[in-house]
Image (cartoon, rainbow, N blue to C red; front, side, top):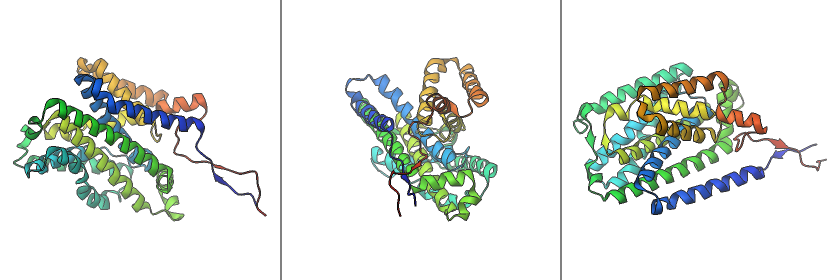
Length: 333
């Protein structure tokens, strides 16, 4: 009887992973020689990468298309304000603020994950708006006026900038490593089975709700951490901005253009969005129109995104989360 084993990682993928670690190492020492402007710009890019990776984890692998992830971005920033108000050091609050979102995401998951497709997407948007309204009623936030993270202003500007940058970089590395480990393991196979056919996945023993809940909570925490890092960089918290639908628009653009359901696609999409903002950001409404046109062109002519074009070109997807089987030369009796 012929036996099968999981195919080992290709040499090209190994080199790509080592190259990624080398890039991360260079980025870790960048504040030593980089200007303040470069550090601030790269911090924003890292926030985009975290958001793209988290939304891809949710929609690209578990099939949970959400247009309300801004709920967790805004909640992350709100929890930072609340924790700082209790006397917690701001740097600690930035980390814990993201983790505290579990207290909201876990109970929500018991309800929203029972909804199907469009129902789930709409429910998440409605919940985001409802949570924003609740946060605005808190006297600490002062409605649409918002509130500044005053305690951050008391810290030396260069120290604050460097810490926020390093925190963002660590968060990106953790997000990428965690998503890789999850998706290359059993959970990744189960989530993709649910995405392709939920009923069939359940019929072969996949715990559908358990897998969905894990992915949902991990994505929520990742988005919340991105929100806390963004607040630490921007200093000012305004509910309309923190809970703005533009965050989800950015996530949709980055993942769909980069390549939905691919590992490297969200990173490429985040870099592309960042580049478009840098080049055309001063054009106001024309910039937004340009982003929309790019998204439409990809939807019409490259529905699998940039990674799909790369796959067609080289014949395989780099760092694919889909594992293949091969038969060794020996045979079992």
